[in-house]
Image 1 (cartoon, rainbow, N blue to C red):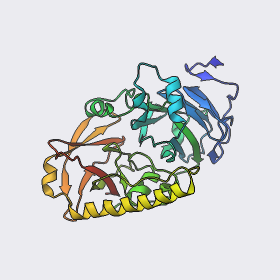
Image 2 (cartoon, rainbow, N blue to C red; image 1 turned 120 degrees about the horizontal axis):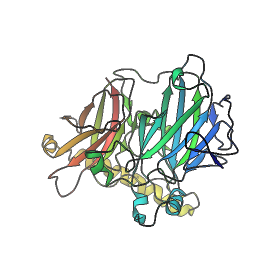
Image 3 (cartoon, one colour; image 1 turned 45 degrees about the vertical axis):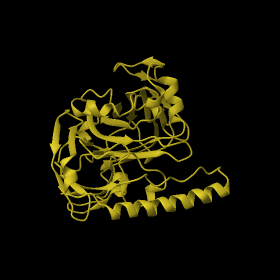
Image 4 (spheres, rainbow, N blue to C red; image 1 turned 90 degrees about the vertical axis):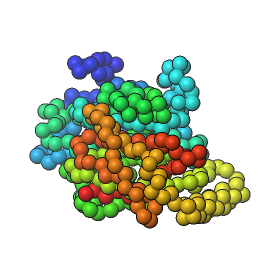
Length: 360
């Protein structure tokens, strides 16, 4: 292994000339992937981060004058905690590995978006997030190297203000142990799956990379509906310069249980299925029986933290007569971290869920 002129590490898989990139990169030994720092190549997936931040590059030429769309699928699986224990210093508490992870994605040295992923208990699937990055033809140099950096919230250079406060609830060394499942590359922007004033449900919006609430599991990747804010916060990614109206609801009790492990006894799976149905019915009953009124806005505070410049802004909250509230996030060219604090809240803290997302 040797160091190149840019200060990163090269491997025997690297090559100097730009070449064609497969539509979907699923093998870390493909020569178009140029490993740089804190990243292990894998077979069956692209690789796994072993440091925070981690960086890697794609050696590919531009598609003429068309922009290049690169979509990353990241996930936390049952092996993430093992890698985290192996590569994170022993002075960091082991319990921190189970905290939500905020990952800021940079391409060509500029912040492009962010993902919020919450580790799931063993046997309850992965936390999956997707983010698309559009690179203009002029952003790819003659050599064709597209450099991607994955930063954790604690290490991100622009973290300040409310971001620092939120970081106490977020895992340090956030990218350590995280898997890069696939990298999809297309010669131009994909067909637009949304339009202004078109409302998208929370799961569809998260699949498109427009928001991130904690990650979807494999079942949610094909479903529509609301998503719980597992960490009391969410990320809103840039959306073609438009503002976004978010509709959020209140959730009491515990979230519905996830699917049990496949290797558990059949009788246990049947009991888990019945328990999930009972929890869903009870959850809906609680929400319908006592929806919080307008007075809750007195103790709700929503702050927007720009993950590009660290600016902190308090956003107004509008109560919805049918229940829940709405927040309008101004259009910006940087990802926004929304934190929801409950000052002087009732003894039983309220949990939140994202219902839908509307570009305006």
